Image (tube, rainbow, N blue to C red):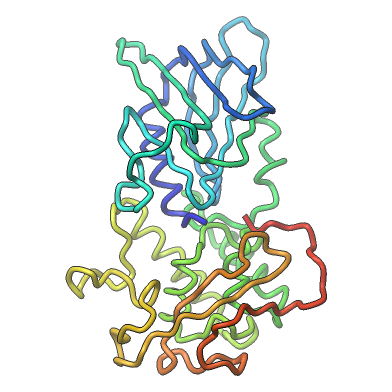
Length: 312
């Protein structure tokens, strides 16, 4: 799953490229909207909501149609390109893509005659719906860490959401977008390391959830405009951008203990099966599940069925 700052950057670049332009052609390569024609519609804005990307459209004058929103989700491998330029240049996914994986293709023209092409590869959950109905897709998400209107109310709601299930692991709670929107697997590992908390520890064991929420927002804001994601402060030189994520078997940058790679999963969070995390056993303590390597997947709700939430 993408991190919230990845979606934020893609939305910003798409907004700069498309806002105010009129669509001259469109292709939505999904069965639900295969016959949709958005020619003549104007792009009002492109905005993120958590990990969801919303292209808001104004209908042609006199058409009588309501404003519409073109929704997509990057999931694991989705990427947008504007005029051939990848919007995730620091990611391995920024390389060449198979044309067969195109899901959305838009061509738009600005009033000054400038033409822009935007193509989405491997995005999921493509939906075209009335802007007034956006809540059908994003209305159940928790407070968005990159919301420009973030307030103390958002912060308090995020804390309260996380605290609703004190016996749930903090690592899984952070990934649940219905509690707090924007944290993905990278930030989950990095946040827990910085707070000296093991991801398998329960929410109740974390203690100060407010500090955790504040840190999550601060890290996403710091990286929202960066091409390369950094959580270490950028003081460790090349290849020193992250504390633990992806560094299994290497030395901890803080104490030199060996970083461990473990697995965590939960049935009700679709897509988290086998998702790995990284920890320092000295800085964050041993795995409370009682395993030294975390080589097996763990489900804290074994025998309990999914509750219908995807956590996305």
